Length: 342
Image (cartoon, rainbow, N blue to C red; front, side):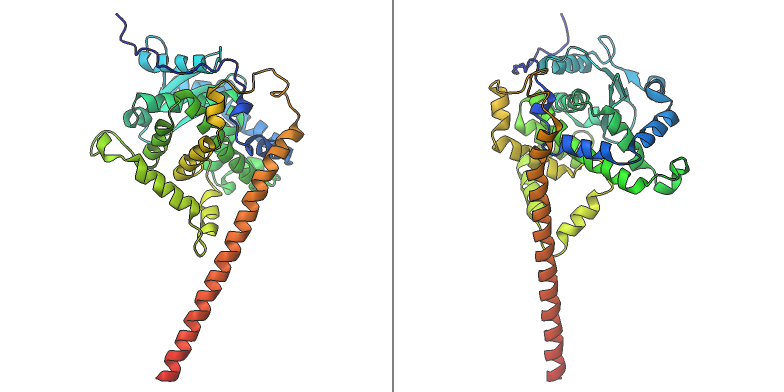
């Protein structure tokens, strides 16, 4: 008798195209990144530094465990199950690497592979691991792997430590990589939800990424999704004083959005009805005209999102400035009144 878990009752999304779940700003941000001067040279130099795709793969072959039917078989079974859910015939190689830092990634160029950190396997339950695997498969299917590999490297090193890029205006390129990377994560989060097909599981993954989970001090009873989602909405809607400016500054240098933001974005996507429509079979098929639509359509889809984001940011900054000025004026008047009554 097999010890492998029985397949979970999930809808199969045969031939689903990644454009179905991609965030409206994802593809547009990637195209904007590709249009920046110096991007091609940076990609070429970073790949040369790493030894190309073979060098990247050898790094994990040397210092990680490749998952397969007889190596972490339950994990392999879940990975194959995810590929079947998305109708994705080529099962990417999967590795587990020993590290106490929670993370996972999709790497490579022409033949991407997925890496899970051992910390993720210690913290997550099976459904959450399946969600994480679907998230990374989403990156693979969307063709994110190359650019995410470069973004991760640029995020790890300071600009002054890259003499090989002398002559390239690196800061704008680095910020563009990171901006796209954050939007790509929102796309992959949607793929994770489509893999597990349980909204609470997808949001619980964000909860555990933000604050840990099982093992040691924690038990499952210590984790409560409802107050975490309340915290998420509180963060998203907090624009007091200069909060909005701090949010932007905290985010500029990272590859991933804040975990509370990601949980709130999942809820927003579900509330818009997109998730239910996909499960009902209303999605773009790979190779269809909609899947091959021109870049201009993606720009139009993203325009409204970025216009609203910029408008909200401008309004929030204006309100913050007015609030700060009002408080400063009030403090000045109070000081004057105290001085005149002394």
